[in-house]
Image 1 (cartoon, rainbow, N blue to C red):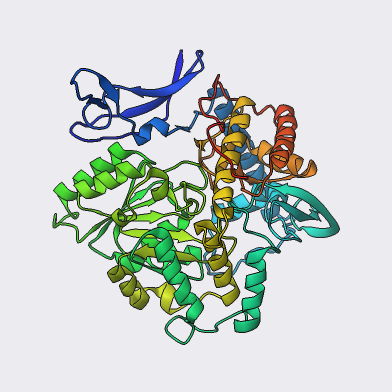
Image 2 (cartoon, rainbow, N blue to C red):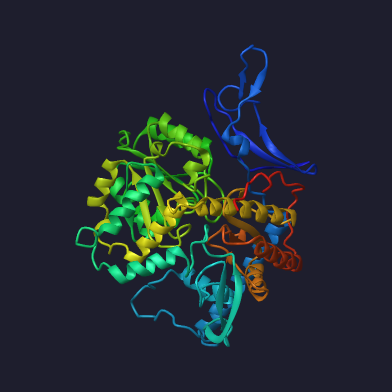
Length: 559
């Protein structure tokens, strides 16, 4: 019997324990295994009124299904060997270039006498010798709206990837690579019409920041609507999602503060943490035992050398992790935050709109109080078909950010048609348009996710993440298979994203699918037929899981 521990680690209530979700291969049984038989406080049961009939108390853990199947040993060895061969060949070819036998056929950094290289040597080596070989799988230009179907412009090369050129041909493919969770990336319909109307009234730019005549009635309306939508006192909206993190975090913490960051947090959070000047410590992904240990150490030991108490401790997590497809154990994070008097920064870029019965993100998904989250951040690029980001919280917090945030002071405010796109889509999600279109999209997305994930697992593929995550990673492992997977799918009419090292661990290269409410069952089935053929040809069925314990049958679709 072989058991895989994916460790959703919890320490609830009166006693600390580890809650392991385990997968047992051989029996095909998958479920929750509690080491000490206890959960949710004492034992997870409550007495009936007669004092003798135990009734199991339902908790969020009962519906929490997340899997990260380990890489098979033989696959890991072949993957390392593949990268080793590429590196060895790369060094040989670099030697040939240095002695003049082979010529670099693209722009490169000039060698100036007395100057050290401006670029890192490994970065240049990786781009030239590894990335170049499969760069046609990325940066693909499209010639259509980024909806459920897209037109991809074909590129070719005559020098083995040194330079790319457009061939003039286009491929119409199913779009499983764009963040279009609720299907609002459209060029027709009510959202597009209202955005077009507003463009005629306000133009396409404000040409100024919020503090300098770049803040109009539309921006105020959006701020108020987002605060209501999130269930918080106030909100501020900004023109760029990445900058919403990287430029606002330095306004919240500084030297003498401590940031406890999930090790898989997005680069915008990493950059914002570094720019703040605060001390940074990472905890294992979604590991509540490790987070609590870091909190205890921070409180008992204080700052290095002086041992003075930290000015503040900020826990930074995401709602849905875009590369892993996992969902943060928010109830446990909130419990630890309250227990140790820390602040919580929650990035809902991939969960707002896509998660929860009302589409209000991971807080809505777990049925929690949004006021318990100190800083609620999200973006409009995924579920709203627009651009920009927001931060929600208390009135005091938002007033402070309006004055002190670099993203607010030094950037041009959001363009009017973008604001209107967000307003229109948010009203539909909230049901303000007088229809149930918003709820219909939310339920359709949830059904599509469950159906697509279940079918992939049944194919025998290793699929990462949570059963309700709109991001669906499928492991391909070997470097040669990264490019092959992307090309073969595109050839058969399926557009997707492939990801490899260094964006992922070296033995966990993957294809990442993004499911949309706009996808019909027929579209998903067509994509599955393509994947059935491609994965069989590439021999990607590495999973040893024998059964699936989740289904889309309990999701009620709205006509």
